[in-house]
Length: 125
Image 1: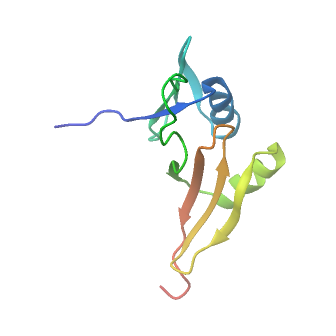
Image 2: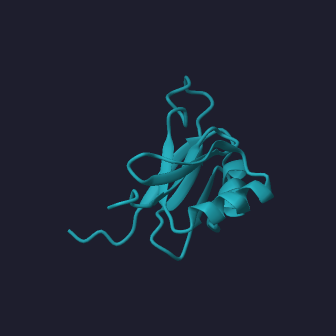
């Protein structure tokens, strides 16, 4: 098997709001839109994102609650400053974990948590 692409599919109450968040703050572009969905893409290794309308007639499922999409990036400190300037909803400020990971988290209008992380080896390694 040779995987040539990947897509993360998220069922949300408002696909347009999440789409706006991903295009405004995370560099995605709209690839395809329909009445109840938005497909987003990038030109790098990031997976495509399909935001689809959650069926409001069904009982609420897990939805985006507990969903975390993590992107390994370069220059996370600069991204943090850019996101602050843009007024993104940063829910966990930039910090460094003892094992060397530097990360931040932001949350979109539908509750999807997006983590940006960069590995920075601990001093002395």
